[in-house]
Amino acid sequence: MRKLIDTLNDLDNVLYEISNENHPPSTDWQYHFIRFIHDYEKAKPKQHPVGMTFQYKGGANAALFDSPADWVSPNPDAAGGYSWRDNPPPTDGRKVVLNDTDHLWGIGGDVAWVWKTFTRGANPLFMDPYDNRVLGKDSEARWLGIRRALGQALRLAESVDLSGMQPLPELASSRFCLARPGHEYVVFVPGGGEVKLELAGAGGSFTTEWIHPVEGTVTPGPEVAGGAPRSLKPPFDGDAVLHLRGAK
Image (cartoon, rainbow, N blue to C red):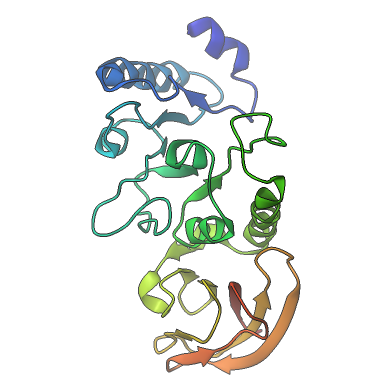
């Protein structure tokens, strides 16, 4: 391990994972090596994130979130009526969450999963079946929307101030909202239709735009004022992404 860390330490694009989907009896062993990497890299020029993924079979997500890992990839289970598949719990900053379809379905996911994951503060990772050569048995067309949605989510992520935003589902009637209140809001509206956004505590006005979650087409909307809840409706049918930014 020391030799591996010495060799890779100068690289930025490194994530450590102790063992993929290792069984629950491996917990103490994984915790040990997470701490080992953290401790050994303290004296190095660079420190890299160390992760722990869902333990198969019978693992509990508590073992991941209670671990010393920097990032985790959970199984579908989540408390309080949430599910990492179709209703991810809002992340709280304790861990970076890589919401990986491998650990949720094996092969699975859809466009809504991409945007629900993003607006709840987690990172969508898609295990692509690669033209159905790896595990996949469904039509290849099923995965095109997910691939495109991931690209659109990345483009939006690169254009907003993610460091100042957090998942705040209570601000949107759709319950999928990533926001820096008073400054910027990203709202996912599953199925489309009108959405109400809570702007009572926000001053000034906001530019609005509707983004197609797959195609990425952007349709400007009207400027809206803060100070009260506002209802907005996308100009197209189906899933939609709303982006509000404080007007300059």
